[in-house]
Length: 318
Ligand SMILES: [Zn+2]
Ligand SMILES: [Zn+2]
Image (cartoon, rainbow, N blue to C red; front, side):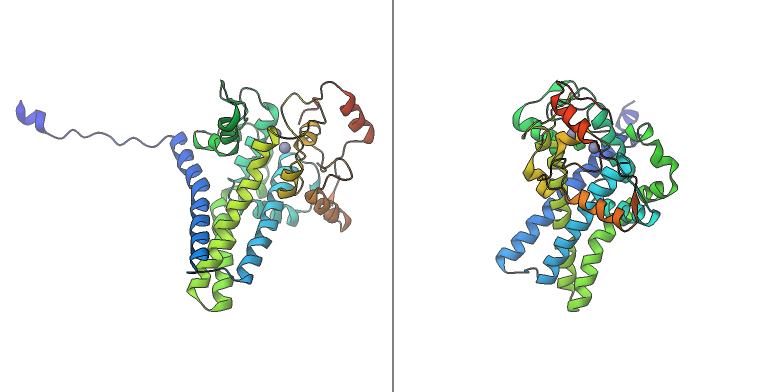
């Protein structure tokens, strides 16, 4: 009997659940760029490796391109269909948005549609006021809406809320090749800097600044719409959620900070509805339309905007 008791017991290894896998991917997505920023700043301050003008220009240029990929592409085009675009533009915006490392197009679209359908109520993936059924306030709410929601989130909305992405071959291919786009966004600036200076050190600096630092900056700009955009700012329209218009968030997200306007008129290609509300993303859509690469821009009429401001409750759906 003793021999039997002493025998090691074979326990079938348990496959990680989708919650665990998504949690690991989320941790890598959030913390690897943050570690990259810490390394880049420490190397620069200590004088060990400072970025050159070329590396800083690539960082700024890729911030612009990938952020617009998210705001104009992922958000206004693929999620809300606020305009139609030529196939080449859809492909370019889909790849640029994917390079921001905010998840595959299919995930991004479905989670954002869930946010609009259940905004600040049960089922909203990233409300600063609710985690499941549990109420949140203050900094805990900010953390949950900004990044915390991704750490314990099993995504299933893609099965129901993004059928148009599934049925569109181009969108589905962009989604499936997501790891390739993220890798290209890190390796490309490294390759350019490495070849330009014929130096491995500059290849690493290019990848660090144009890749990881740039991803970190675009991440936190975009995520501030989910957190600050539902916490701080004016509510011009009495939408059923807590969305806000915030000029600073609009500045760092190329117009997405006019988030109360957006919740009032989700399918509008223009988020800055007043003349003074800067909206770089809408300027790009207008430019694309002017040269024939975008069409059928959806915009609320002046009467709808005025009526929305007068209304005690605006609920126009997505
Ligand atoms: Zn929102
Ligand atoms: Zn939206």
